[in-house]
Amino acid sequence: MPGWDDWTREVVRNIAARGFNAISPDLHFRQGAGTAQEKSARVRESGGQVDAAVLADLAGGEAYLRDLPTSNGKVGLIGFCSGGRVAYMAAARMPSLDCAVDCWGGNITAPPATLNENQPVAPIDMTADITVPLLGLFGNDDPNPAPEQVDEIEAALKAQGKSYAFHRYDGAGHAFFNTHGERYRAEQALDGWQKVFAFFAEHLGG
Image: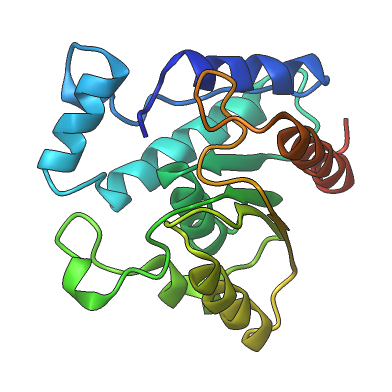
């Protein structure tokens, strides 16, 4: 959230500038016309993104990248906020990926009362199915996911013997990468991006 906005496009350009093929599927295109914020509001009102549709859209994006003449055959995924939740879920449901990055994904530890037809399974309950290396970046001042929720996620990954690395930042909350928002934290974001690109270099090449 809030979807396919200016900052999301900036992220894609930043990744492409490092020599990667990069795309961002518009996961809210089914909401019709409107700004990213307006379409996100409709998504929330309808019970949240439909996980099955999101995974299908990501599979389409993955196929597009693999078919590019400049592809080296490897594909990774990065997501922020609800996209971080999606990245965690994709790490479990898309075994053809080579790696995934969860940036402060909220509601991964969703309690049963918050589940619905659109999102019937909490991503943390998919942990056993994760098959790709996972990088997680979190702000210690974030309420969702709060530090204790990040602890719970990390414990689940450890218990299942998954390949992961988590990094947590003091003085940063939610959306601390977002240069368009008041929560941007330059020092923490710079370090975070360095970790992201090192992770991509390791698992995707250049």
